Length: 453
Image 1 (cartoon, rainbow, N blue to C red):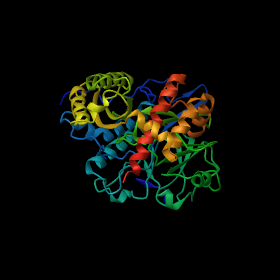
Image 2: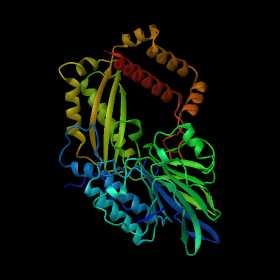
Image 3: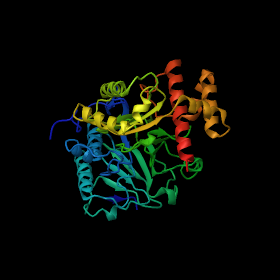
Image 4: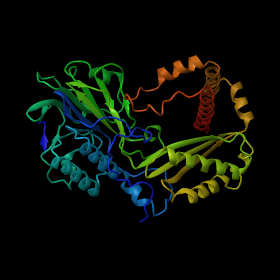
C-alpha cells in the first residue's frame, strides 16, 4: 500500500452489475468506459461510508433465515461495488472514508475489504483511499499488507498522485485523511493534463467547509469526491461538483439511511467531468411508510392495506430484502383497536409473519402508532406554540401550490444529475396535498411527544 506521504430469498444479492441502476432499481443507459474515435472517454467510481460489518438497528428479533443476508449486507454491497468498477472498466476507484466504524473493525470485514482491493488490482484498477478521524489503517490487524494498486492519503499534506493509462495521464488525485482537522493542505493544483480530483472525508459539512473547497489552495479541482454523509447529494452550488455518494448500505430508520444506496460512476470526456450517475448497490433497502388511517374501518382492513403497500414496494424495489419502518397517524375507526390490548404490537407480529419469506423479503422493523383524535389537531390549531405554527404553515402552503413549489425547490438538497429522475417525477396536486397533510400531522405528533414531561 502506498501513502501519499439457507433458502434463496429474493434476487441474488451478489448480482453481476451489468448496467447502472437508478435509485428505484431501473437500468440506465450510461455507456461503458472506453476510448473511441479519437475522443478520450473514461470513468471512475466514487464511493464512501461503506461501514463494513456495521449492523442494522431497530429490527427486533428477525427469523434465522434472513439473518445471514442482514449480517452480510454491507459486505455484499462492497462486493457489488468491486463488480461495478470491473464491469465498467473504471480508470480508478475513490473511497472517501468511512470504511469501518471506529474501533468496531471486524476481522471478517477487513479480510473481505482486502480481497476486494485485490480483485481490483488484478484488473489494473487503482484505488485511492482516505480515512476519517477515527480510522487508522495501521489498526486494521487482519491487513498486514496491501495490494500495490492502493494509495492511502495520510493525515495532513500529501503529494498528488497521477493516474496513467497507456502512457497518457488521465487524472491527478489529491487527498488527505482526517480532513475535518487538517483542512485542504496539499491540494495546490499541479500543472498537468487530465482531470484533477480532490478526495476528502467531510462529515457534517458547513458553508465554510464548502467555501474552503473553492478557495486556495483547493480551488483548482475539477471534481470533489467527498464522504461522511449517508445521503447521496451534490453539496452546494456551482462548479466543480462537490459530490457525496452516500453510504453503500442503509441501516436504520433515519432519513439519510432510507432508500437506494450505492456509489457514483463519473464519466469524463476529453478532460471534462460529466454528471455523476448513481448506481444502486445495497442488497437490502430500508424504507419508511406512513399511512393515514382515516377511512380504514377496522384492524383487519388496516392489515390488508399495509400488506398491499408492501406488495407494491416489492415490485418497485427489486432488491433482496426490504426493511420497513411504519408510522400510522390521523384518526379513524381503527384507532381504538390499535390502542387497546396491544393492538399495534399484535398487528406488527402478524405483518412480520406474513411477508418475511417472500421475494424480496419484507421485514416490518417498527410500527409507530401516532394516531390521534381529529379534535386534537383542531385544538392544536388554536394554540400559539410552534406545533400550531407548523399546522398553519402547512395549510397555507396547501392552499398555494405555487408557493409550495418554491419552498420545496429552495429547501430540498439538489441530487446528482440523473440520480432521482424517476423518484422526482412531479406529483399531481392531490398527491402534494396528501403528502403535506401527512407531514404536518407527523410533525405535530413528534413535537408534542418531545415536549411531554
